[in-house]
Image (cartoon, rainbow, N blue to C red):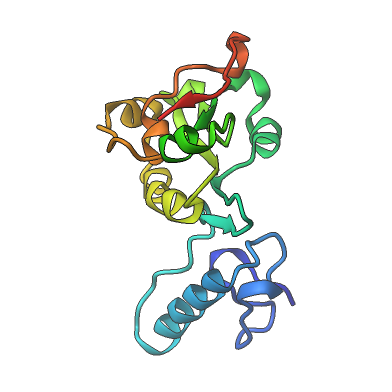
Amino acid sequence: GRGVGGTEQSSVAHIYGIGDVLHGYPELTPVAVQAGILLARRLFGGQTKAMDYANVPTAVFTPLEYGCVGLSEEDANAKYGADKLEVYLTEYAALEHALPHRAEGAGFAKVLCLKEDSERIVGMHYLGWGAGDIIQGFAIGLKLRATKADLDGLVGIHPTVAEIFTTLTVTRASGQDFGAAGC
């Protein structure tokens, strides 16, 4: 059988499924490793903590990296409705790459917020250098139900590309240009 709920227990009492065998869960090696560790601790260590499959950060290590945590814009629209979301976005040219190469639009950042829940962040997306490292750091914010106001209250380290998340002001709904800005 397939995994059932948060226990990963199949329809057969002594058989469990973790990792890629679970339908609809992230198919990522670190997820399977963590799920295995937690399952072993539940079965043999007297612990009760199960794998939290929500808000697992991931990255694609292409020449210009992509990282995300939480919902995609499409999934957030389907789950909550487009009218319930505020989507903050920007293109940017990282300072260390913009000056010597005159690059424009070398990166992209997007934060999806649920309007009716104090703009709670439900997804973050980043295209640019160090995406895996940057998204990894913000993933805890989603697990702790961070809001856009929490991001706005952070003091960004300058000049870093991660600080772009502390200065997002343009929303998709505003229709304003979200074109390249330096960071």
